[in-house]
Length: 244
Image (cartoon, rainbow, N blue to C red; front, side):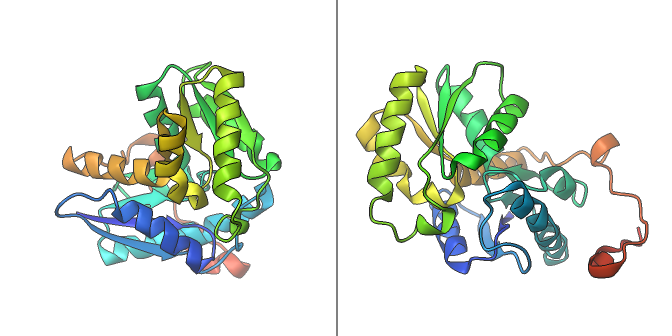
């Protein structure tokens, strides 16, 4: 099976981190490639960024269909363009927030999200309401470290772990969900320090795609996820015209 992990931002170094964490959980017989969006923002930290990241994501999914990918991971915690991506393929497409939040509900009664900037907290709450039962998400906490600073700021691990410890205490939660693909490398250290499950969505989504492929289950082409009807697109979006 061949899994394509798509980084919807345009920062190659972040793709390398994402790829390393996805490869760490791939099973025998899995070929994994990670790709960086060819258009869009350097990082995704606002609704504006997220909207402008979607065309690049969809182009990467379309290219994956030509290249023979069997499944996809959308490696941004806002899960941008996830529904649209599912309209382009019958392969499984999993977002990292979706995977992490679902996984958290399997190993604890409540989880807390530790994310980057405070302005992204509302999006995390929206996704938790979509993906998990009411009350499963106990809190969303921001360390206020920009996404691209996660790679080089030596205080990141300490700040994230300390914030997660406070979240567990104040929220009464049992599990921590890391709310950014750029935090993936912190998972093992945070789990060891906190003594509770700490879930990285990149790894969780990669494993979930593998599981669906093993079950021979893909995206339904019936109803809402049927291919989008062809129609003209103009201007910068002309390249997205579909003939079928």
